[in-house]
Length: 387
Image: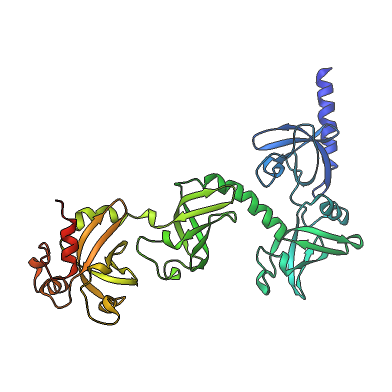
């Protein structure tokens, strides 16, 4: 008797399933939720399945529970019923398009051609209109989309479906928000991520880390050396690897670094430079209190105005140094903790300057501790000696 009832139940469910065809919109109740799919009772003791991913919101949270009613479209009857809340394909009827409009389900359409103000899109034999502003995340015009098949959301349904306005952008933004939720999970201080440069400004570059989540790569974090022009370091479209320096959840701001992925040149200063020796450097800029001189990329020292000998000229010491020129300098102080190096300009034409500027002429002398050269640097150096 039990076997006969089971057979009758199965037969009834089978008949019910056969009456349902692809493209049909059905209503069912969630009866079970598994790791990959949920089971839906569509009536007549027939069961269908739907992917769990289709039951989640943009943040990845499950929107339904066992017992909830949902509407979905049948996308397959092979081996059982398979449902989708996201697709109503080409065979959709006018009633199904109206249902898609009211339930915000995506529909599939083919871009026919560009028309005034947007594009003509064919959906289930119906003509629809997609404004330029609704075709992509960024406004696009031209024939780039002609002939393409996309998913759209119906945002206006009039005259029984004869007047449809659709948006592809709405779906792209939803997908972007869903992707952003996943991307943000990986954005923690210290993480090394790959992103694409979106735009470059004087103060830095904005980098897309995925899902529309952007971080700022400030000019000061691009390289250890001073950056005069950010566009010489990165360009829009470049794919770069960056390190997450700071994350401000409240302000939704992410600070990125590029130079942190290379060795800090200051870690070698103690072994590479010695107080009292003469080296060459490039003048980078002039300030009221002195001249900044780059000894190597990322290592910059200050020749304070007090270390320059009196010149008798109206403009004083600043006439002795020109940005961009190479000069000989003596190291007076090294402060590793504050990353500061005190320098003194070695007079041009002196034997010590010639030795370091023309190393082939006098290599040994350039390696010797500096001798007095009759400037105010001698006085400052003497004051710095321990008593």
